[in-house]
Length: 509
Image (cartoon, rainbow, N blue to C red; front, side, top):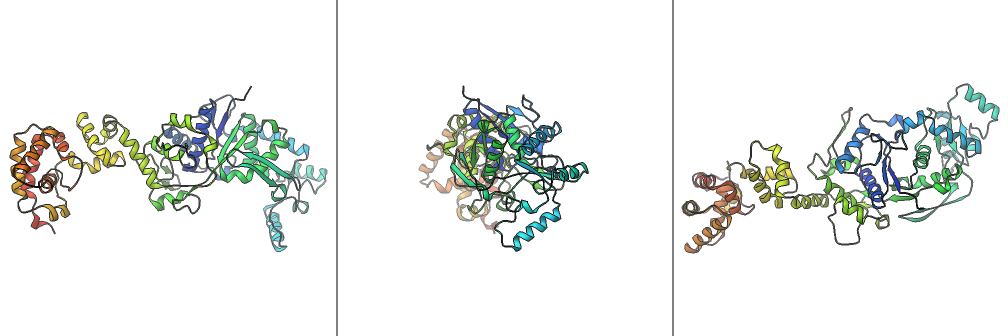
C-alpha cells in the first residue's frame, strides 16, 4: 500500500517570513492537498541565539492570511508533536540518536575551543589548502574523540568541558540522490566537512533535528528552497547512518526568487528599495525593525498566492488566474523549473487588479464600507462599479473616486487651460436646461446630450469635457452619464451651475 503523503513547512523563528518562505509553504500545501495528504507546520527553533520574539506568532498569522492552513503542527496539535524543536529537545528526542551515531562510529566528540578553531583555519589558509574546514583532512590534528583516548574523552565530559558532536564524513565516497526537480545529483564526500550535529548547549543543529523530526513525523516529501541543496548529501548520510534509508523522503529543491533585474536573490531590503513588499504581512520588531506587508498594502491574499505560485511553476497553459482550489488540482513538482524566477512588481500589481475586477460591486462595497461613514450600500456598490476598472487596490476606489462623494473644490489646471473655451460656460448652461427636463438614467442622459450637440452642430469633445470638468473637476474618468445617474439630478445640476460660476480660465496659472 502506498504511503500517505506527508509534507512539512519548517521555518525558523528568526524574523519575518519572506515571500520565498511563503512560496515554500504554498508548494508544500498544494502538493499535499493534490495527493490527499497532510501539511504540517513545524517550528525549527534549535538556534536559540537567533530566536526573535514574536516571529513564531508572525509566521502563524501570515499563513492564516494567505489561506495556507496546516493539518497539524504548532498551535494546532496532532499525533506527532510536539512541533517545536525546543520542546522535542526537552523530551530527549535528539540525544538518543546522537548517541546512536557516536556508538556506531559515524560521529565523534570535538572539544576544540573557538580560539583553537580559528588557529586551525589560519594554519590551513597559510598552507594554501583548498579548504579551511573541519573535515576529513583536518580532524586528525584537532582535539576530538578520534585523536584522544576513550579515557581522556570521558574525563573531559565528566569534568563538564564543553564539546560538540560532529558527523564523521567518509572518505572519497560518491553520494548520489534524486531530486524531483533537478534529477540525480552526485557529490564527492571529499568536498564535505564534518558538520556539527549537537551543540554545547545541548541543542541539535538544524541538520540533526531536521532529519530526526522528518523521520519521526513520517514525512514522505521534503520540499524546500534551493539554498538547502548543498546540505542534502549530509542528510542522505544521516539517513543511512541511522538505518533509515528505506524511510528517507523524496526531495525537491525549489528555485530562488530573484530581484526584479534578475541579479541575485530577492532580499528583505529589496522591497523598501524598490517600493514593493517582500513580506506577506507587516513586521514590527521590538528593536524597531519594520517592513510593510502585502496585507497592509491592500493586496488580496488570493492575488498574493496566485502571484507566488507562478514564481517557479507554470501550468503549461495560457491560464494565469487560479483559485487556491484550482492550484491544488493543477500543481505538480514536475512543472517547477530549475532556474531562478524573477520577481516582477508590476505583474504582482496586475494580479491584484484582476482579482479586484472579478469581485462583485457588492463585495467591494463591503470592503470599503468601514472607511466611509453613513453611505448607502447601493451607492457604494455603484461607486465600485464605476471605479474598479481604473484602480489597482480597493483603497484607490475612494482616493481616485473622491468626486463621487463630494463636489470638486478645484478643477484640473491643464484641462481647463487646454479645453475650457470661451463659449464653454454657455454650453454648460444650455445643458443644465437640457438635463433638468431629463430622466436621470445613463442612457437617457446620453441620448439627450447627443441630440443637443447634433442640433447645435457641435463636436463631441468640447461639450463633454466642459460638463466633465464641472461634475468631477477632472479631464477623464468613468462614463460621465453613469456618474451623473449615480450622484443624482439635484447634485449634478448643482455641480454644473457651480462650474459655470467657478471655472475661470484666466485664473489658471
